[in-house]
Image (cartoon, rainbow, N blue to C red):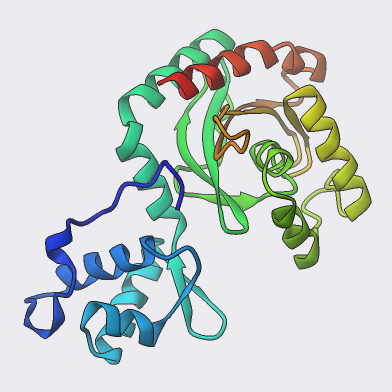
Length: 258
């Protein structure tokens, strides 16, 4: 887990066992167990940790999965889902993050996001809609690929090399004609991001949408979240978008200090 996570339950909820009435305490205990693990967990291990039967564990996990709070993996493994990450980020720094992003939106007029990496995807943790006449389809808790988004590339560039290797190994799926699908080109792109301090999604994730993203500085040089400004290409030229980089950097710095 990263610094933007806030545990959904107190210590007193752990080990609810069969004495807990209703599914809510079970769900909270399972979420807490998943949050405490650095990697996906087997259903049997979750059941043992929380003192639940396997059928009950599976039933609650299925409900949480359908709601976006839990993610199911091959081999009976489970981890926190995108909505859990988004909720944790909003709960941890709700007012300060929203205030910074709102100021950024007011300055540039366009939709702004904050997001982080959850395993192999970007999770949007915050969104402030722009004043544009065209609304962005993104949503808080929604996920997008790392290699084709501004936030994803910003965090890949400054993250561990093993993360880049894993993204490349899974394959760079083409989402638009502009998506980077060659490993060598992606690595060159990430090197450029590290040098310039920002990433650009030039219609790589969605046609007619272009964005610029800046990582939120961290003491260890490994940022866990980033800020982006998204624009519609036929309203905002690339040169104008790049002119927003200083504003995005200032917002990222404000979040780091808040």
